[in-house]
Amino acid sequence: MGVMRVATWNVNSIRSRVGRVVDWMIRDDIDVLAMQEIKCKPDQFPLEQFTAAGYEVELHGFSQWNGVAVASRLPMENVRIGFPRMPGFGVVKPTAAMPASAFALDEHGLPLEARAIGVTVNGVDLWSLYVPNGRALGDPHYAYKLDWLARLLEATRETLDATPDLPLALLGDWNIAPLDIDVWDMGVFRDSTHVSEPERAAFRAFESIGMRDVVRDAGVPGYTYWDYKQLRFPRNEGMRIDFVLGSPAFARLVTGAHIERNERKGDAPSDHVPVVVDLDVETEMDDDRPMIF
Image (cartoon, rainbow, N blue to C red; front, top):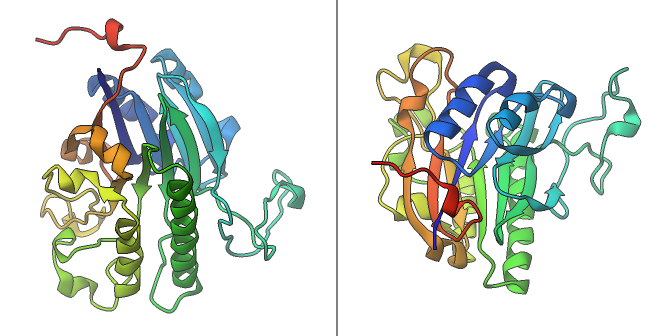
């Protein structure tokens, strides 16, 4: 068997950081990267740099907000945009570039945001997810967040019930700090989103159906996000909100994991850093990998 290295990274605008992202993928020998907040439409995505580095890209994005993508140097199959019964939010706001007919709507006529894309690589089902932020307790976006998570849970449970041996991973920016140790100071977050009990209960619900936080299970400490404001990164005032939740079959494949904290350093970094997981999966590239001494 060989190693397939998968990662997730909220890149906070791929057009602003494509050089940094691709350079890191090559340097860290990444096979598959799930990206969030690409903040662009398909025709704006900087595909050339990924293609030149040997990666193909599947993406789903609207203009300057949200957006998810998967870049892989291994073949991607079974590409899915959104999950079953994914809820929408807000109102349709047509523009000349995006007429009303371009919007996909949920069962209630609300526009579906670009927050979920799934692919299959080497028999492993991988989802890049950008969970709604919630904004503030009591905000309509907070109710949307909880509904979105409930629908994702339902879809995940149905998949695992139908295919219990499927290696499945939900990768992305969950916008939830499930434990007190996942924020630098719980006092700062009192009465805030990301740490509220309903959000944490929604996260635990995935664990209750067998999904595992495989990075924490591997004993990897640390935060994955630091706000740009108030010197949060130099003071290590961060949050752990980016996760890889894996099914039992996926968890059995995990041989290692790490958080790339150094990617928060340097010029114009994203406010998130990559989270990486190694899988014991045979790939067609195993014989072509360079020897590293």
